[in-house]
Length: 78
Image (spheres, rainbow, N blue to C red):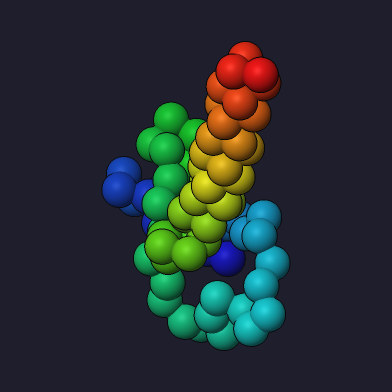
């Protein structure tokens, strides 16, 4: 994929997350987010691509943390 930074620099980059179907076809324009200090670490700016893994790990962490708290309290009450 190729994009132009806010400073006008042209960059070629390969998306690290593969999907089926792909995020776009060759020649399509897709929104991109990148760190201006490290534009090679760009990401396609779609909500699922940006928030799926943090959301999944947050839910699992909350679930296991809650279960651990319940089991600790129940174990202390015995």
